[in-house]
Image (cartoon, rainbow, N blue to C red; front, side, top):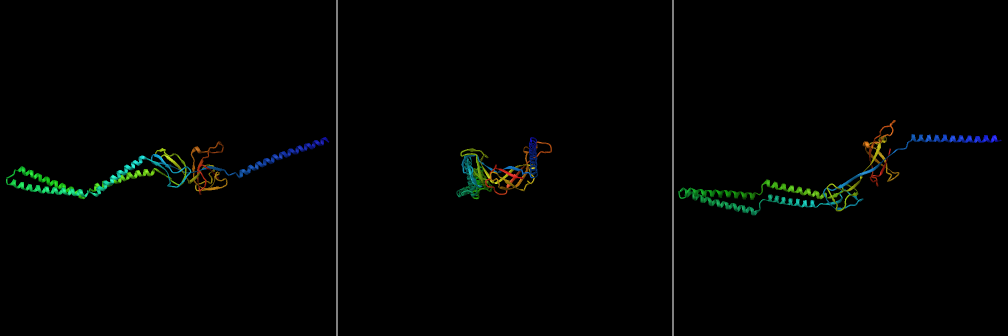
Length: 338
């Protein structure tokens, strides 16, 4: 009886051993099957990148103090909107000087073109007539003295004196006549041209200073959002100093660093799907590949093993969204499925 009981216990233990071994075999088969399934149908590898957009730095052209800032950080602006004003006392003083020079040049030009005044013309005419009368008097005196000299009444010295006076009177008359003709004719063409050139030169100086005054108003270069203002009211800033930044989300894109072994199916002009976790876990956005370019050597991924492996470079892939993506901000993570 005891022997029979012992045999039954041995049979039970053998059954348990067989069941344990069978379970191990089934588990091993399951693991091998799962590994085979993953090897046959590997999961898609995701490539992550980030969003970026064009950012303009609005800088001043004229050194001065910040007089006014018309926007705040976060405001949306339109192209051509006035953002700030930079005041400059030096530029204002230069404008006054340039305007005064232009006014003086314009007056000189009008004077050259208009010629002498009527009073000046009349005065020159009277001087000429007076000189003509003096010539007539000295002519008669000369003829009388000459006659007396020929009769031997007066010496030759007296005749020479009267003749000299007569010639001087003729010269004075000729000079007075030319003065009158000049007053009647006005300035020479060369003088008029020179005066007009001075007016143009002065006008150019005024236009130059006016351009500085126009540049003292900072204008938005495009539609966008004010993301940062670097100065405050009353600050003194130099030429070229950035005053604020404008973010233009109408010109946005995505940047991905893709290993070359994942570049299959990613070519310039291709349309790809992009997911943005910050906006939606399920929605995909369409984008077009604009650039595929090898990155610098420091961005290269290198294999850690040498047996059957090789160095793999990374490529800069730029993707531009086909449609506007509301809520997209630079720096957001983007996923490119490959």
